[in-house]
Image (cartoon, rainbow over all chains, first blue to last red; front, side, top):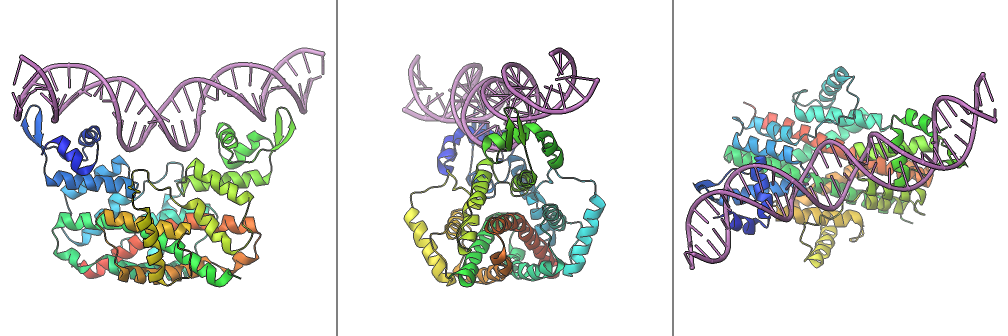
Length: 209
Length: 209
DNA sequence: AATAGTGGATAGCGACGCTATCTAACAGGG
DNA sequence: CCCTGTTAGATAGCGTCGCTATCCACTATT
């Protein structure tokens, strides 16, 4: 398959594919000569993945580079899988934030883990991210009491039960990782939207006249 | 209070404040002459709101303009409140998406509402958004079965119970609206992060060796 | 031999969120 | 009443991002 065909199959312009090649998001095709290369199904799939991550997940080019790098070097054990997925999806700390209390940050995440009572690493991406957004919310005047955290935590836990499907253990590592990453990227907005709809339902029952 | 003071109070540069004024995000100060205006606490609060929406919620300038417009003209009834909040926070449909099946979109949202069995409008922003992301997820190869939707829906519902607090009914309309919008913007990432941590907890229990 | 397509390099573009500069008006202190 | 400094308002520019377009030298196909 030549590049024009790859472009056709994925509905992505040739110029953009070249850009992805340049940026290292797409692995090079098999060189057939100085000015010719062959692309295969792995390229089609990779391009689709890139487009999904960018347009649905809103990931930056840099971030997608991290994702594909992780896919090419998947973690050794199943348990590291989600951690890797979370690492590459974790939002960058905003440079506009004050960072003068990083110690508090560590304290906070440790306290959160204790409050939730879960067997998780207080230094993992996910935990740090949680501490991060809670801190930011506090700065924005929205305090999140422990009580609510525990309540939400129990619900998040139930959702996670369905996320961490047992079949993850039977897949090849790279495929499982991609499944975890894409699943996270795609289902985050579903949950957000679902919450909105649920809010309207509750509002309709409580406040409709 | 003059503009330099407003800049100092909010730690936002004067040039940026002028930009916000130009863009209609910040209401003008009371003109004291051709080259002087007075700003008050409403301006300080408004600037803080704008910064929160942009840096935490990742909202665009256009979107923030919608938010402040809604705040200046709050809905008449309490029930319209969340709908208004959801309207202004709803992500723009991506122009890269196929839109040749808008009828299916309507069908889908109607079916979703039926599946969930909630008293919500199938044409509301929230419902449309849900149909939107589910459709996109399907295109990305991630099918969301009804069973999972109902399960997640029940959990989303529980979260929403705490979101739609009874005190919303006692607040002034503009304040309640701002609370709803900021609350949504700030707590969305908390839920997302909490889900990540929960996933790691489940993974640790199921897959740790 | 003509054509169409290729890899590779480089430059430009349009949107976004500011940021910097300029000007004319004005205010307060001495 | 002048001097210094600030302000509003207008306009232009900047840095990043995600492409997009153009050019070139080359090569496989017709």
